[in-house]
Amino acid sequence: MDFKNYYEILGVSPDADDKTIKKAYQKLAKKYHPDVNPGDKSAEGKFKEVSEAYQAISDPEKRRKYDELKQDYQQWQKRGGRGDFDWGRWQAHPGDGGYQTHTMSPEEFAEMFGGSARSGGFYGSDGFSDFFSTLFGGGQSFGFGGSSTGVRSRGGQDLDVDVQVTLEEAYHGTKRVIRTGEKQIEAKIPKGVRTGSKVRLAGQGSPGIAGGPAGNLYLNIKVSDDSRFSRDGDDLKIMLSVDFYKAILGGEVRVPTFGGEVLLKIPPLSQSGKKFRLKGKGMPKLEQPRQYGALLAELSIVLPDNLNPQELAALRELAQKRGIT
Image (tube, rainbow, N blue to C red; front, side):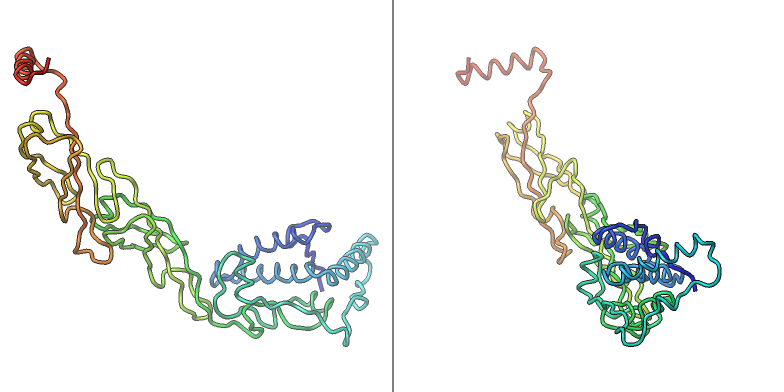
């Protein structure tokens, strides 16, 4: 039987404190957990190994006994390792009560790993090595979810992916190719989404365990700013530049929308800041995509910057007639 160096397995020093040991275990357990490595026997073996190491040195009594054995074993090695090591001296005896292990509830698992363990258990009675069993005796194996025999069916974890779309894509709806691990998914993003919207792709999350259903994939939507339009709920807003002459005389102005240009008739003597509401020219409503908000167009009068002498003379004459000097 081989000696197991539990400190090396967890990557900590023999004088590490409980907090350091727990942190090292969390990191390795998350890395090798079967949810993250479905069907990977090597990762499953590593997960069992780090779980066993944590069981041994996270408990003060087990750690004390293990440290004494480790010191004895190292002395035996320094003497050249002649003969067989006396494992019998360290073997747990009937009546010692065996080792006691903790079976994590799903809530405890989520708290420790920052993930989810919403259904079922994982490891069975073969979860520990002969070395561990010899040293600490027989007992219940490491697990979570209340099961200690075999693998129990449980659902896969949900996954979240951040997706950024333009405001125009949010207007028309769009698609994105999402990669999760080795899997590639073409996801449809409905029109009307806004920053904070979640698009659910059922069954596209992590695979289930032992035939359990796969988790879901959630797309967290962020809509980027647009150079022309700002958004207010399902309404859009635009600043509409109108030249000086048209503002005075009135006329038609072309207004851009995501559905194409429309003509807006403005009355004579329109002032800067005057607002027009174009019904049905805003964003589609996410839950009712055939209905649209409005487009709010605010006028911004643009003064001419290169009047010729004749135009200046005409304006002066008009100003004199209105009593402006």
